[in-house]
Length: 196
Image (cartoon, rainbow, N blue to C red; front, side, top):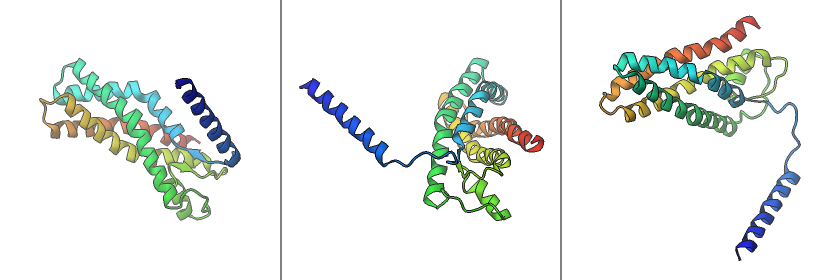
């Protein structure tokens, strides 16, 4: 009975995979730039320095023991990086799609250029001649919602880990810590824009 169920499940998976291959559109080289594949690796590379900086700010501002401060910074940053960033990007992508931002609308005017890196920030439309400035500009713009979500997640988790400290003080401290680390993250796309 169990073997028959497994065979049936395998058959259903095979049929579903085959159907998806038949009905799916061919992949094109100009599919656009899903910005999560740029922002998430950037944040992963910066994760340890960010934990160090934010842990130091928590230690100083909240008078925490070093181990407690850096543990709080590590746990809260892991949550904000691995959950907050992808979920925020997913929401931005969904908003982009449902409002009609999933297709090309041109990039001739200043307004069209602005919309191409704001409205379409989650998944850039591939304007190949313009991509050199669009990607770093989109990175800068994405840092704004990522910053807000990161600050709120980290304040929430840090407050849960340090219940003896006033939540408002933790919120202000996490705002300060994230302001410092996100300003440092912004230097990367700013540098690309300046030296490109």
